[in-house]
Length: 599
Image (cartoon, rainbow, N blue to C red; front, side, top):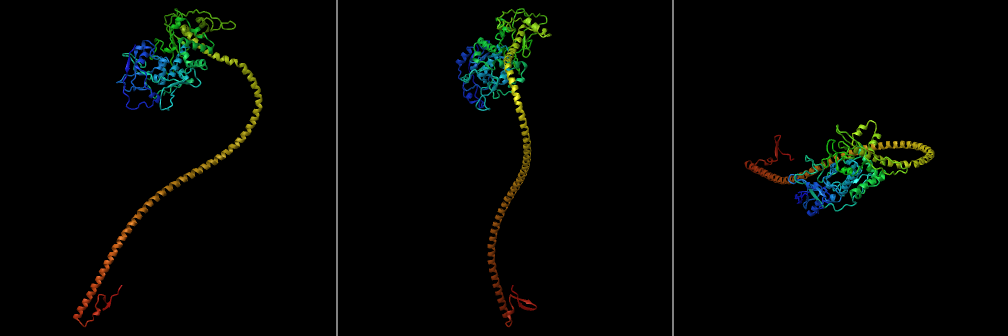
């Protein structure tokens, strides 16, 4: 057994890189200890106790690590893949995954640990049902019946566990658990053992499935599958599953318990719908050796005709589904042919025998069963299955060589699936035919009612004519009203246009008014300054006037004094001279001394 390592150490992120994860998962630290993980490995839950156990090591995460955390340092820390305990212990998942599981996870872009346990139960049920009914396991058929959802209450910007819910009107499985609790806090890491290659990587190192949680989980435009876009084989598989389990859904607990009980449970449900309880045993039950050599459909993958059967992630992963590789069923030791290859959509298994090897198709001996027919007549289902004679008598002319070159097991499988689909159709037809008489009576009653309705129809036709006339008048009124409405709308548009122009004009005037108010304010300020300057000038002028009066007065005094001095001098010189003619206010005019005019 591979070793169980203590605790992995990864430093917590420096910032919140997981804001998109819902709060209840962020608040769920791991409660699974080293002792519990060791018991888990010893019980063989991881790989089913097979030799694969030695290929993988399991780790208990560090205390700060959570189920959704991603390895952002792959060069320093070895990559791992997350798993939670419940998907192995309660649902029965094992690694390495089947080719169908790998293809489905790749298609929906969801890591195994981000898928809810109920969804893993749906995947397991689908694989087991297809195996027990010997139907190819197809991703397209599964996604036709199921829709991937993100059932969180914290909005579309948060992601939690992704879930598959039944598509509307196409529910074939019940819930594994109505309310699932106690699985979120027990999880662990898995890495490949030294020098071992993990199933989730290709040989080139490319991831075949997501190994870490992602906000983009389920964001794939190819997840939604509609019936008309499915292949013909997938459509037939979907019809069979819907007919068998559409009205009576599968109970996962009854199916996923004991393998033999689960197989009988599915076959009984199929028989209750098709009416063919021994269909599988009649056409495929060749004995214990044949059943032991048959490989389950859910655990195989598609391979080219020249390749050997392979399993695991290296099997083909297609966009439209996974077809199963049916193991060679040795009906008789005398059958010499190459291993058959089942091809989805080709009507069964075909083989390519070597050119130099003779193909011998024997008639297997089978015990005749008692007839269930009331007349004692054996039906095709109840006869001994003489494959070679049946094929020779029922073949379309010209196709013998193709069937003679095919293995008996492949032909038996093709006929089994064809009759299973035919039985479903016939079962539906029985119900329809049983109601024909009732339909005939209803048709007669409908004929009578039809005659009575003819008169009502004529009356209604007349009323319809009157209503048409009233409708025409109403349409005319409506047209007139519409024209008036258009005219009113045009006027309203013109008024709105004028209103906009008026608003623009008012806006410009307001701006101009504000500018003028600014200019007036500046002018008023300038006037105040001028008034102040005027008052200063007036004060200065008054001062100058006072000085001027003093100067004038002093000048007049000086003139008069000069005049008196002059007169005194004249008196001395010429005492008899009349000095009255001498004065500062005297002027000579026309040779005479006269007084100057005073202005």
